[in-house]
Length: 112
Length: 112
Image (cartoon, rainbow over all chains, first blue to last red; front, side):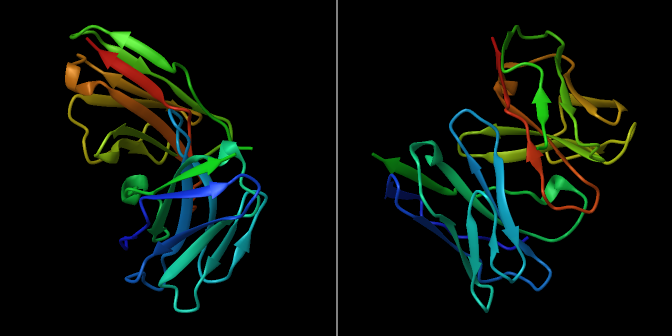
């Protein structure tokens, strides 16, 4: 799986949009971009994933650049409960979970 | 919503005890996984299973075994717990052919 680079930490004001960047310059054509988050003392939570088109669900939007070398996760109206570590992962489509590697992630602090 | 339930959130066991960590998922997923998460080491795969009675070693299987007698249930067994197995254990599941992995809440195990 391709390596990803994320800023170690970010702050965001409550109610504002949180934009979390991720670089994955070595991504290959069949690798998907996945985002998970982990709130303190809980298991990782799936947020969203995409291949090359932008994606939106009830939690977030995922914007992938045309060259696919970077992406941005957008939480449109951050709340205090969105404070967590956010992990960007790129993965090939296979059945095994042994390729799931979480890097350092971005620690997002949403402030009142 | 997918639900992955781990039976115990917090356990304290003595060195040498046999420990069972139970995990149940309610979405008929074929794949199930056990990870441990430690500060600075990220998420490491212990074992995974892609079908009933099937199991595959992950990156760190030593000191652990697993059991998958029913599709919805995947148990992690520590035959003789040791202090270096103090960790947070995460169960996860996914559909065959899907890259989206869903995690449980985690089980914090302390071995004294």
